[in-house]
Image (cartoon, rainbow, N blue to C red; front, side, top):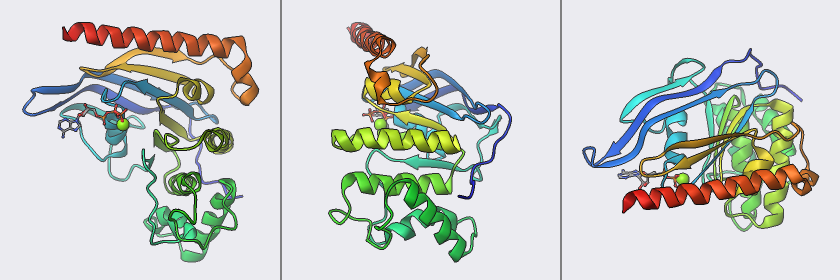
Length: 273
Ligand SMILES: Nc1ncnc2c1ncn2[C@@H]1O[C@H](COP(=O)(O)OP(=O)(O)OP(=O)(O)O)[C@@H](O)[C@H]1O
Ligand SMILES: [Mg+2]
């Protein structure tokens, strides 16, 4: 199939510098002195998982990178330069974000509409991507429940994001509402897409096992104010399948992260008193 993703040498693909986010004239401090650097690995991309308590600022960070929000102060750099509206960033939201009045094919092809790609080519590429996410045969259904299941709708959103904005893909708890089997299948589908086309993925989840299985780098955040308290390099093989979840190293990593998150939560609670 056609290759939509351009390889470039290693670079600082996403950099958040000295970010502060406040509301209510500074009375509510959500993020303070927040820094995050994500490097793109040549021909491999990068898979970052973000973990942290509800309200710590994970979605806020994704919104900066996608351009939906600007911080109160600090810099958002993509590819080493201040973010511009031309930067292509895909976003899969916490709740599925397909357009129910359009068919699956139209939904997936949508991202290319804005890039001036002719209709025939748009549909051809959309069909390729629909095949990749396992939805061939559903092209002409409207993207709505129950004609498509929750997992299928989420795959429509993922297919559209991959087709539209390939170099950086932000995924905000994309599998939160899926049943366990769909979720496991979707994890593997995402890994396959990642191996093949290696975008840089920033994936927010509350599931530690999912973060370790998918992530190369995991960041644990604290809240009040939000910041990164731990960066864990996942030293599991680059190509993974589910059998890795039964290994001692996988268990060690998940246990370590669970303990760390409990510690961080206790620290934040103690500070409040
Ligand atoms: N307009 C606003 N005014 C005040 N506070 C806000 C505003 N927008 C966001 N916040 C606060 O910013 C904090 C971070 O929100 P964010 O959505 O980034 O959290 P999150 O880490 O994604 O949480 P979750 O895991 O529940 O999705 C929250 O405490 C939220 O209440
Ligand atoms: Mg969120």
